[in-house]
Image 1 (spheres, helix red, strand yellow):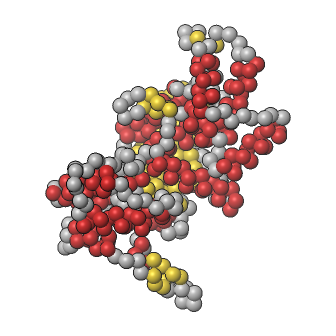
Image 2 (cartoon, helix red, strand yellow):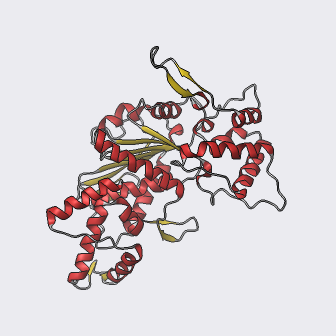
Image 3 (cartoon, rainbow, N blue to C red):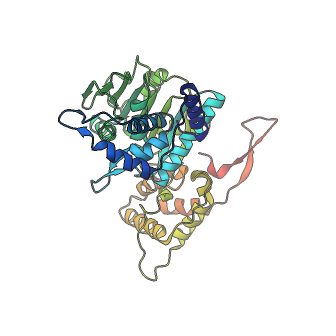
Length: 408
């Protein structure tokens, strides 16, 4: 569904089994034909004004089958959202979202090759599009695959409702010939697609007595705002046993950080170390160069701390940007310097560092006031040189090289 190798394998198997030759229409070709078919729908009668021609019917079947096999084919042509200014628009994934989808794609391929599932801890800076990625992934599974059960949950019911609204928007804007039958929709609780036997359950992290998803198999899920959950333990105790250990099981637990040594921090550290059922990735603030950028004043010269930050980003970025080295633009540099100064003047530098983290270590800040000034810590962190040493804890006989500057 996600990785090109898996997609091609599914398409070839489908074509061979049914004697088909599926077509990859361009986005523009698909959009043009969608508009022609949309004109046939009689909203009042809730049916097409006439029977489809052979060509129209073939197109609808092709698009439904291609969408079933290939998540990106469908998302690029049929998934919609509301823009920040309120307009309805087709999804165009940001670079930060593409990075996340790249991890999920690779995770799927590895799960099929090696066994296991595709579960992720996604640590991030503020406002990098995680909710929309998850809503689109879950929508695809619910609308095109049978016997799926999805769960979305945030820290409290109102936030969880917003997650489900993204899925509702995608559903409402599917073409009439692609939209599955929905038997019922209980706002803020559940929606059920009876012909596909697919359900979306809406939970939250304040559920008294736990019981999140307990007793039902769950194939795909999205949990967010994890540091603010009152009952984080129910994820591992009640929920995860309901998720099959299978390559089609997809899960995202995503959030910014809220201090050190809480349960979200511990969960992420375990996943990052490779000692968990989950895998982990981090997306830094600079992944979206247009979102966090301010045109600098004329003759502005970056401060020394800003220049150190630029060097640190250049060194660290391949690790977080799937191999790409990032050199901060002048607008990004000025945004970082200006915003950092604003937080610092309010005595909230630690909050700035966790909200606009540039690496996974920086994200988890101590919420208590320490004996060392945040500026000093930041300066030392940006000037430290990686030290290659031995990790004797792995084995007394075969020591492992470790970049100790990056150990959590």
